[in-house]
Image: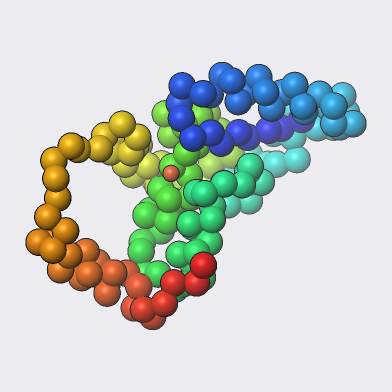
Length: 149
Ligand SMILES: [Fe+2]
């Protein structure tokens, strides 16, 4: 059997792992030897895009960006899609499922994670002052000027 759990906060990892395992035991495949291998239904290096993950805001935003024709580079989309997968980018798990592109993007994900949770500044931002900068980013990365929610 294979499972991959995405959770929102690193401190909740053990809770989610034990919670998920409790319910996975009720699955009829739990004792099927065909699925009780390290890889389960996957093959070594199959690439994360081919792995079924628990669905959440990460994948939703990834799908929105893709459907909106963003010009963000693949590494940025990878970061967005997997930023809550702490077991991967912070604990080093699931390496055996990654392809070369995943491993390259993982480096960027690990850099990004330093600026994710608990890294917010208390400094007040003058929205009007920074607005032109963010508008230029929107113009650059959303040339269709439409977000498809
Ligand atoms: Fe998030």
